[in-house]
Amino acid sequence: MEKPLTVLRVALHHPTQGPAAFAKVPLKLQLDTSPLLLGRGHNAHLRLMVPRLSRQHLSLEPYREQGSSRLSFSLRVLSRQGCVWVNGLMLRYLEQVPLSAINRVAFAGVQMAICIEQGISLEAFVCCVHLSPSPLIYRLKAEETDEHEESPPQLQPPPGGSEEQTPGRPGFLQDPSQTPDSSLQPSPGGGTEIQPRREPPDKAPC
Image 1 (cartoon, one colour):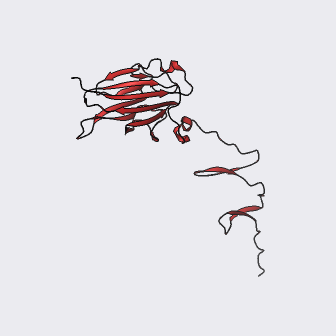
Image 2 (cartoon, rainbow, N blue to C red):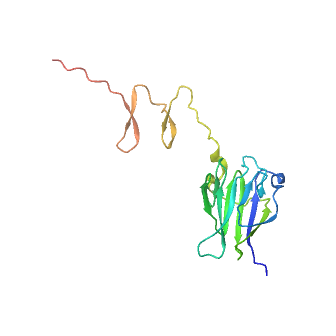
Image 3 (tube, rainbow, N blue to C red):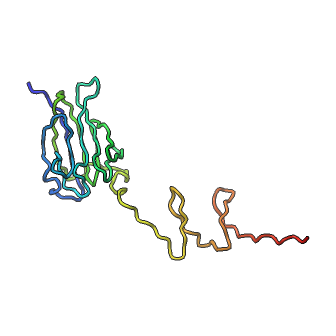
């Protein structure tokens, strides 16, 4: 009697790339306990033709926890470019995280959902792929997008103005009411008020 295999059900979606990006992705494949590679290289099991994707971008790696009779899986990042979001956690090169029964993954504009259906075989597993025409991840956190990988636009001060940079805070333009004869002084209420600059007192007569 054949042993039931663990099944990884992987769904893929990209909001802008057409079907050609997933044309080289098999809908079903069986592997032993070696890692399943995803990328745009010829040796990737799941080959995606997506911009900014590395030849080996990430791997799904089966392993057996001590005392367990089932296969578990982890996701490892193999790309030096960008990052991979796994269930809201940001991973970079060579970082990895164990996967749960249901997982959401985002990288290089790709949305991927991974559902693990446990089997009893410790020698092999099956990967079934579904190409989704609709979004898989409805996230509220903007940081899970790829926007952080691009340089943010730099705000330029208006001509004649100066910009004061505070670590961890955006730059603040100079107050238009501030003149060369005034300076910023802390106010008793914790804010900032403009105080006129005081001239030094005349030297007292001998």
